[in-house]
Image (tube, rainbow, N blue to C red; front, side):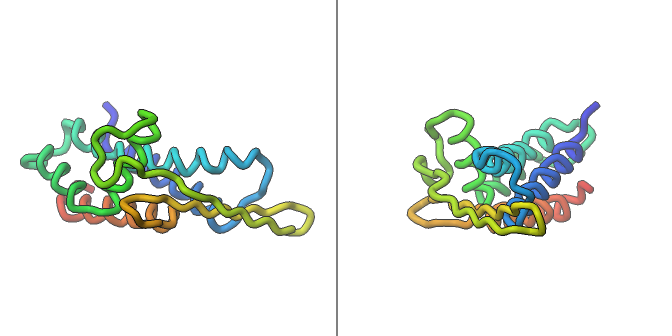
Length: 155
């Protein structure tokens, strides 16, 4: 039986990929690949809630309510919800913050590292009239999940 920790570990692996993209990675792919990696992080991050919800080995009282309250009280995870569902459905019909949440811009830097080209890619997200750095938002989402796990003693 699959357990929530498998999805948590997957989310962390996606986070490590976007951390590398943010800080600098060998540039050997089409630039759209890197944006796909960022998208995949937010999709996997938000869907950790489904894995926790459906993991029958977790004995959390009122699990569904706790997860809903947790996400509804976490600005980073509400934005994550809007990113995830906007990407998944093309158009967001039930936003937690803003139906127009979207990746707004990207900035690429290239430098020569020895004989190799190193790319750093920064993405910004527009949500609720504000602009967020995608990597900083991803970091905040990870911290929020860590708090949920600790506060509910599920690790």
